[in-house]
Image (cartoon, rainbow, N blue to C red):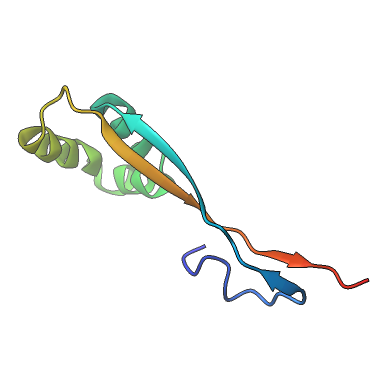
Length: 85
């Protein structure tokens, strides 16, 4: 996914991807909840007995009003192709 699937062999005539994304407006609680679902965060907590998201959220809260909704953009990667007949 880091390479947007471009490193995967694709044996079709490739079509241009118009680009898609999911756009959301989250409050701090939604952002914090999402970050806490990451397996890497849970793994870190198990090893260090400390949640790194807590410090990050404290820093964000110190710089941005809690009234602000943060725009979150999740790009959707895909490859599309034509199957020859």
